Image (cartoon, rainbow, N blue to C red; front, top):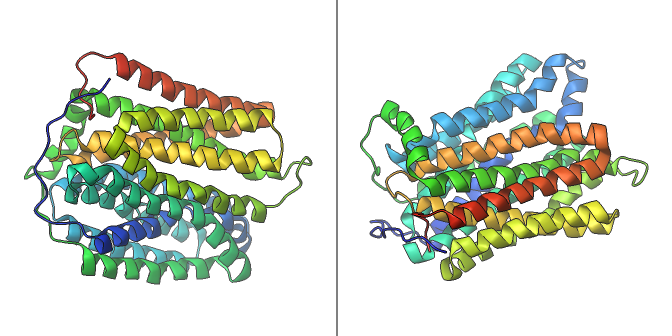
Length: 401
């Protein structure tokens, strides 16, 4: 069953291919920064004498990202997005430089907090692209930008692991500086000027988040669904290195990093899912993506081999990304004046789901091993499917067709 939604007029600015691919590249460059420190944590600990503080570095990055999602994303509706995006990339470059020259672990924790917050520029680009796209092309547009986001997530660990191991962790952060500056220059050269969609004050914009959550059932269901699905995704990547290190496989962190490249096949899911959503409706793709997620965990649970992990991770990434792009397609159609705030709610929920599931996956691994993690991942997929089924039957829905 589908939901009718009002159509909004086309944007007064056109989104050309150069701008679209620049936004995809910029999104990938930005989001990669929140994952750089994870493979290098052991190297960082060694330099700082195994201080307990170094354990807070990934947490500080994630916390900064969460704070940026909540406090910075709503600004996208009330300020000039182009100016804000360029500015955030410049701040990101500065934060990375601070990380690279950090004389102590506490300084690196503080720099990591700033890196995380400024990296949310990736989530400014997604609703901006949606706003600049014609309604009939919105799905494929979102898919293209999200392909950039997924590329950044998957390749970041492989890149930082290699650079950190062979050149040093500071060099990885230094490498991030010109990447952020190049992204800022790309945004300056390709992004069109686009008037804010709302004139409300910043405080009012933050307070409106509760109203948007209450008003739009489709937003609630999409956010909760994607929180469960992203939790399933996070559970896999949280435990993978530990699973590969067991006597059953006896493989190191470098092989775990290579799975990021295998999972990059899922990059192709995002634009493909967007195109299918444009033609068959986003709900069809959400159903498909959720079912694929469950299938992936069945493969993980019943077939213990490297081949199963390779096949499963491709299916998992394909399913998660398909559902993500389509759920974003749904929420961006709810209120064209509030897309950044809608994305704030959606991404914050997704991020919290991932953080909670990382902790649950660690506990499941400790007490029940890989089968426990597989049951957790499959259960989260079933939770998402149940939410989708309940929303499908709810009267008075407001979803897109």
